[in-house]
Image (cartoon, rainbow, N blue to C red; front, side, top):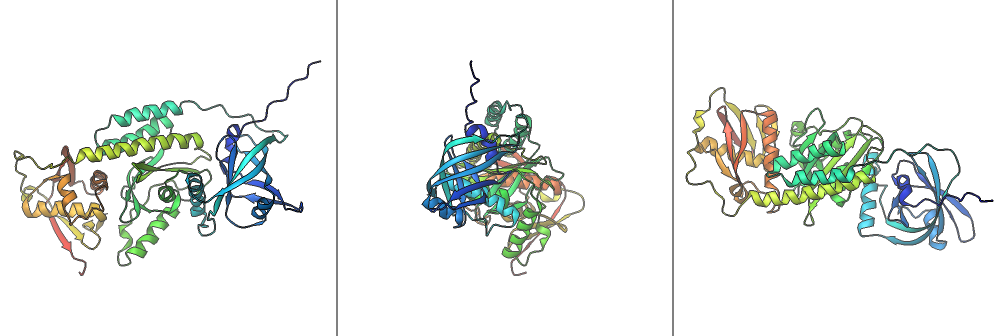
Length: 460
């Protein structure tokens, strides 16, 4: 009589949903005299087809046990179907540096930042275990969801569309469009790095009531700031609170600019109650350029395959940003000699725009309304000053880069992104002043009303 063969045990990859962090794992160990200990584990991290890593945060009983008796059992749950599995594991080593440690540190820091436990949830090491056996726990569970298809094709289509972009502003809008069209992502934003201020500023977003262009996040704060600091993806599958971003911005500004009124805070875009968030760094040539961020009101919207896809798209975006930055500033570029003379500043008509430029931090106000600050504010101050004093309206990227008054952090700073930021802030808040690209490395300032510019020194 033939007996049905038992199903082979699942692989680690097949149960990878268990390591998404939605349900805490339970770890059982024994001391050298056989005394058992059971404890919850903050993080069980998928390493590869044979290994997982557990977060080492405290020298507790679990840690003490595995150092003398390296065998343990972890109970994990697949939140998509409610199935439990026992992982029979053997401790191999602890890593305190390198890609695995940084990735786990970023994930843990992202969770801790939102829970107010950043000072407690500090990763001391990544304990690497070999999984010697996987034992399914008997019990009823839901059927698995249908497999997802099309992510790889979506990444391919995204790369094709990004490769066709010829300008930074076009590239930024395209990356948001491809996330919507090919990955079904409705809420996303792109942030660029201000290396001098150690902040990220929003240059493009989609899916929100307000764009939030110009809003800032300090490096190390929240999911986005941690992903940028660690240069590793951070994925959160449970409900968080976007108010922590506003709090981070407000606290940072009070510390660094105590004399500045908080009306210079641009509200950060974001869902009021996000249930899933994923941030990946934008890196090119080993340099951090910014971060790509997506979120959803749905629980567990982004899995490890979404993370893989977003990392690939962010990598392509970073390379394209670098390429367009180089192309936008050809050596020796200047306004051609045959360029028509700029119209005089007095040609604009209507009620004058009162513009105040505070030199201390380059914040710019149009009337009583805050517009921009920092490098973008310094650029606008220069453009309006030369427009009002000389009637000049044609400019080049190169001259901005070489102007010491603007104080660009370094040659690698993405000037094109600063101009896109300024262009969009003007379009949203002061349409009477516009920046329009006129050629490779060249742009013009268009002013529909007279401008009354006042530069206010730091001592005023």
